[in-house]
Length: 198
Image 1 (cartoon, rainbow, N blue to C red):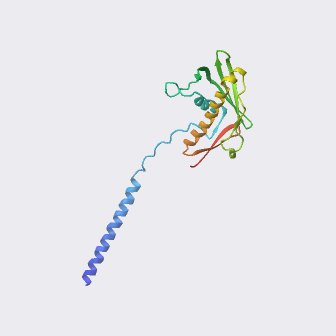
Image 2: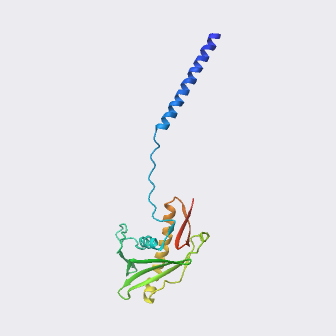
Image 3: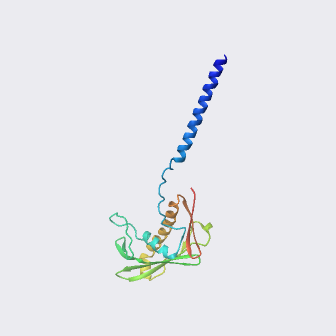
């Protein structure tokens, strides 16, 4: 009886020592094993706060549109694109795009050119507010400001394109952070993008 208990205690002690050694070896190996490589974070193209100069570049990409051949748009400093609508064409000078911020308003100006009007500037004002509680709601005038003939034919297209480009920036800003767009507003001379977790 005593030798059976003694054998049992010896075996139990041996198992305890082996388990302790295994634990020590695993702890030692985990300290020496480098952490798994992390995937690089893709660069963010839309900052949390965009100055008018930054908006010029960011909005030009959105206003370029999709090439008729389906290729990716290429924006250069001297880029000009042709918009086509119901058989009519207008030359859009993306290099002329300028953004200004006045109070709670973002002003987007863009030069368009047709045979009938020559080259002229259209200006689209967007009142976006100065607080993030405003969400993604903003208003504009019935038509852009500019020469009447150009505004009547292309004003709505410019307005819609600028509006879509601003919303696309909000979506891109949120996508780059793994969130959803929540608000646009003006503060300290910059257009600010707010996103929230899904």
